[in-house]
Image (cartoon, rainbow, N blue to C red; front, side, top):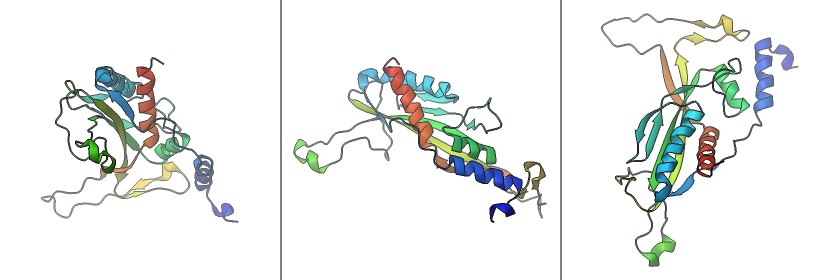
Length: 213
Protein backbone atom coordinates (compact mmCIF):
# COMPACT_ATOMS: atom_id res chain seq x y z
CA UNK A 1 0.00 0.00 0.00
CA UNK A 2 1.12 3.55 -0.72
CA UNK A 3 0.24 4.76 2.78
CA UNK A 4 2.51 2.08 4.24
CA UNK A 5 5.50 3.76 2.63
CA UNK A 6 4.70 7.15 4.11
CA UNK A 7 6.74 8.47 7.03
CA UNK A 8 4.81 9.66 10.11
CA UNK A 9 5.19 13.30 9.05
CA UNK A 10 3.93 12.65 5.53
CA UNK A 11 1.07 10.56 6.86
CA UNK A 12 0.03 13.39 9.19
CA UNK A 13 0.15 15.96 6.40
CA UNK A 14 -1.74 13.65 4.05
CA UNK A 15 -4.49 13.20 6.64
CA UNK A 16 -4.80 16.93 7.35
CA UNK A 17 -4.90 17.82 3.66
CA UNK A 18 -7.63 15.25 3.10
CA UNK A 19 -9.72 16.69 5.93
CA UNK A 20 -9.27 20.33 4.92
CA UNK A 21 -9.44 19.93 1.14
CA UNK A 22 -13.20 20.46 1.11
CA UNK A 23 -13.20 23.73 3.03
CA UNK A 24 -15.21 26.38 1.24
CA UNK A 25 -14.82 30.13 0.98
CA UNK A 26 -16.26 32.20 3.82
CA UNK A 27 -19.65 33.76 3.29
CA UNK A 28 -19.62 37.46 2.58
CA UNK A 29 -20.05 40.00 -0.22
CA UNK A 30 -17.52 40.58 -2.99
CA UNK A 31 -18.04 44.33 -2.72
CA UNK A 32 -20.29 46.86 -1.00
CA UNK A 33 -22.36 49.54 -2.72
CA UNK A 34 -22.42 52.79 -0.77
CA UNK A 35 -23.67 56.33 -1.11
CA UNK A 36 -21.54 59.43 -0.72
CA UNK A 37 -23.55 60.32 2.41
CA UNK A 38 -22.36 57.15 4.15
CA UNK A 39 -18.75 57.37 2.98
CA UNK A 40 -17.32 58.83 6.20
CA UNK A 41 -19.07 56.23 8.33
CA UNK A 42 -18.04 53.41 6.00
CA UNK A 43 -14.40 54.56 6.01
CA UNK A 44 -14.30 54.51 9.81
CA UNK A 45 -16.03 51.12 9.82
CA UNK A 46 -13.39 49.75 7.43
CA UNK A 47 -10.59 50.90 9.76
CA UNK A 48 -12.27 49.22 12.72
CA UNK A 49 -12.90 46.09 10.65
CA UNK A 50 -9.20 45.81 9.84
CA UNK A 51 -8.25 46.19 13.51
CA UNK A 52 -10.88 43.65 14.58
CA UNK A 53 -9.32 41.06 12.24
CA UNK A 54 -5.81 41.72 13.55
CA UNK A 55 -4.57 44.09 10.82
CA UNK A 56 -2.86 47.35 11.74
CA UNK A 57 -3.71 50.22 9.33
CA UNK A 58 -0.66 52.28 8.33
CA UNK A 59 -2.08 54.31 5.44
CA UNK A 60 -5.38 56.18 5.78
CA UNK A 61 -6.25 58.41 2.83
CA UNK A 62 -9.84 59.63 2.96
CA UNK A 63 -9.55 61.71 -0.20
CA UNK A 64 -8.52 58.82 -2.44
CA UNK A 65 -10.45 56.24 -0.40
CA UNK A 66 -7.50 53.99 0.41
CA UNK A 67 -6.64 52.03 3.56
CA UNK A 68 -3.51 49.86 3.69
CA UNK A 69 -2.27 47.71 6.56
CA UNK A 70 0.97 46.28 7.81
CA UNK A 71 1.72 42.63 6.94
CA UNK A 72 0.15 40.24 9.41
CA UNK A 73 1.85 36.91 10.09
CA UNK A 74 -0.66 34.06 9.80
CA UNK A 75 -1.27 31.85 12.81
CA UNK A 76 -0.50 28.16 12.50
CA UNK A 77 -2.35 25.22 14.00
CA UNK A 78 0.29 25.13 16.74
CA UNK A 79 -0.10 28.84 17.57
CA UNK A 80 -3.70 29.44 18.70
CA UNK A 81 -2.76 32.81 20.24
CA UNK A 82 -2.06 34.29 16.79
CA UNK A 83 -4.80 35.41 14.36
CA UNK A 84 -6.48 32.34 12.89
CA UNK A 85 -6.74 31.62 9.19
CA UNK A 86 -9.99 32.23 7.33
CA UNK A 87 -10.58 28.48 7.35
CA UNK A 88 -8.82 25.34 8.64
CA UNK A 89 -7.05 24.78 5.32
CA UNK A 90 -5.36 28.18 5.52
CA UNK A 91 -4.31 27.49 9.10
CA UNK A 92 -2.68 24.32 7.83
CA UNK A 93 -0.87 26.24 5.08
CA UNK A 94 0.40 28.69 7.70
CA UNK A 95 1.73 25.70 9.65
CA UNK A 96 3.63 24.24 6.71
CA UNK A 97 5.12 27.57 5.62
CA UNK A 98 5.56 31.04 7.11
CA UNK A 99 2.98 33.30 5.47
CA UNK A 100 1.76 36.84 5.93
CA UNK A 101 -1.22 38.83 4.70
CA UNK A 102 -1.66 42.49 3.81
CA UNK A 103 -5.09 44.11 3.44
CA UNK A 104 -5.99 47.03 1.20
CA UNK A 105 -9.41 48.72 1.23
CA UNK A 106 -10.36 50.71 -1.86
CA UNK A 107 -13.35 53.07 -2.13
CA UNK A 108 -13.99 53.77 -5.81
CA UNK A 109 -16.54 56.21 -7.28
CA UNK A 110 -18.94 54.62 -9.74
CA UNK A 111 -19.09 56.33 -13.12
CA UNK A 112 -22.17 56.13 -15.33
CA UNK A 113 -22.43 56.24 -19.14
CA UNK A 114 -22.37 59.78 -20.50
CA UNK A 115 -25.06 59.14 -23.11
CA UNK A 116 -28.29 57.58 -21.85
CA UNK A 117 -29.16 56.44 -25.39
CA UNK A 118 -26.07 54.20 -25.51
CA UNK A 119 -26.29 53.04 -21.90
CA UNK A 120 -27.24 49.50 -22.92
CA UNK A 121 -24.03 49.16 -24.95
CA UNK A 122 -21.71 50.47 -22.24
CA UNK A 123 -20.58 49.09 -18.91
CA UNK A 124 -21.17 51.08 -15.76
CA UNK A 125 -19.07 50.83 -12.64
CA UNK A 126 -15.68 51.98 -11.37
CA UNK A 127 -12.60 51.94 -13.57
CA UNK A 128 -10.34 49.72 -11.44
CA UNK A 129 -7.37 50.05 -13.80
CA UNK A 130 -7.14 53.85 -13.80
CA UNK A 131 -6.28 55.71 -10.58
CA UNK A 132 -9.02 58.03 -9.37
CA UNK A 133 -8.29 61.72 -8.90
CA UNK A 134 -11.68 62.43 -7.32
CA UNK A 135 -11.74 63.75 -3.76
CA UNK A 136 -14.20 61.35 -2.11
CA UNK A 137 -14.72 63.73 0.81
CA UNK A 138 -16.49 66.05 -1.66
CA UNK A 139 -17.78 63.50 -4.15
CA UNK A 140 -21.53 63.01 -4.58
CA UNK A 141 -22.72 59.75 -6.07
CA UNK A 142 -22.49 55.97 -5.64
CA UNK A 143 -19.31 54.38 -4.32
CA UNK A 144 -18.07 50.80 -4.30
CA UNK A 145 -15.90 49.34 -1.54
CA UNK A 146 -13.60 46.42 -2.33
CA UNK A 147 -10.95 44.70 -0.24
CA UNK A 148 -7.78 43.01 -1.46
CA UNK A 149 -5.88 40.67 0.84
CA UNK A 150 -2.54 39.54 -0.56
CA UNK A 151 -0.76 36.43 0.75
CA UNK A 152 3.06 36.39 0.83
CA UNK A 153 5.17 33.33 1.63
CA UNK A 154 8.69 33.45 2.98
CA UNK A 155 11.33 31.39 1.22
CA UNK A 156 14.78 30.48 2.46
CA UNK A 157 17.56 29.66 0.03
CA UNK A 158 19.16 26.27 0.58
CA UNK A 159 16.42 25.03 2.92
CA UNK A 160 16.05 21.26 3.00
CA UNK A 161 12.90 20.09 4.76
CA UNK A 162 12.97 16.71 6.44
CA UNK A 163 10.28 14.19 5.48
CA UNK A 164 10.04 12.86 9.03
CA UNK A 165 10.33 15.86 11.39
CA UNK A 166 10.40 19.64 11.28
CA UNK A 167 13.36 19.58 13.69
CA UNK A 168 15.57 17.87 11.13
CA UNK A 169 15.18 20.70 8.61
CA UNK A 170 18.56 22.07 7.53
CA UNK A 171 19.70 25.16 5.63
CA UNK A 172 22.80 25.15 3.46
CA UNK A 173 24.80 28.36 3.11
CA UNK A 174 26.38 29.47 -0.13
CA UNK A 175 29.55 31.49 0.29
CA UNK A 176 29.83 34.46 -2.12
CA UNK A 177 32.70 34.06 -4.60
CA UNK A 178 33.31 37.79 -4.61
CA UNK A 179 32.16 39.95 -1.70
CA UNK A 180 32.32 43.11 -3.80
CA UNK A 181 29.19 42.04 -5.67
CA UNK A 182 25.73 42.27 -4.17
CA UNK A 183 24.38 38.87 -3.20
CA UNK A 184 20.78 37.66 -3.29
CA UNK A 185 19.27 37.70 0.22
CA UNK A 186 18.98 34.29 1.85
CA UNK A 187 15.35 34.87 2.84
CA UNK A 188 12.69 36.76 0.93
CA UNK A 189 8.92 37.16 0.64
CA UNK A 190 7.04 36.25 -2.52
CA UNK A 191 3.34 36.93 -3.28
CA UNK A 192 1.54 33.67 -3.96
CA UNK A 193 -2.23 34.30 -3.82
CA UNK A 194 -5.16 36.36 -2.62
CA UNK A 195 -7.11 35.43 0.49
CA UNK A 196 -10.67 35.75 -0.87
CA UNK A 197 -12.15 34.35 2.34
CA UNK A 198 -10.50 37.07 4.40
CA UNK A 199 -11.64 39.73 1.91
CA UNK A 200 -15.26 38.65 2.26
CA UNK A 201 -14.96 38.42 6.03
CA UNK A 202 -13.69 42.02 6.20
CA UNK A 203 -16.48 43.28 3.94
CA UNK A 204 -19.05 41.39 5.98
CA UNK A 205 -17.74 43.03 9.15
CA UNK A 206 -18.02 46.49 7.54
CA UNK A 207 -21.53 45.70 6.32
CA UNK A 208 -22.61 44.57 9.80
CA UNK A 209 -21.16 47.74 11.34
CA UNK A 210 -23.06 49.95 8.91
CA UNK A 211 -26.30 48.17 9.74
CA UNK A 212 -25.66 48.32 13.47
CA UNK A 213 -25.33 44.57 13.93
